Image (cartoon, rainbow, N blue to C red; front, side):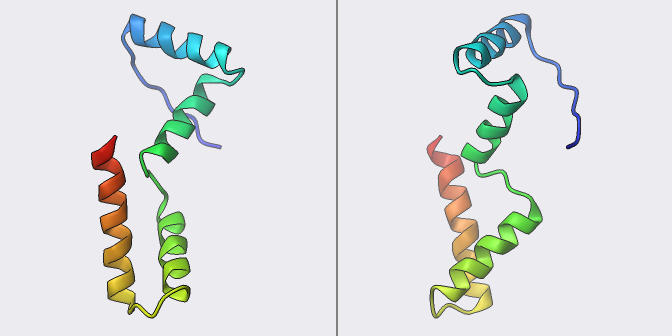
Length: 79
């Protein structure tokens, strides 16, 4: 697993730390879950979604990729 250093305001840091304790998780786990929620995926994960969409439908590669991109955009705009 990779490590990352981020800079947060003191109130944001305290809030993150408190939320982690309340949920019995690490701050890193909360950040990772937040990235999942916002649809942030690795290239491999995105390609796997496209493959899955392709096998479940009669879409062409281009259509499946377009659909996947639209879905990611929709998730990002609703949050």
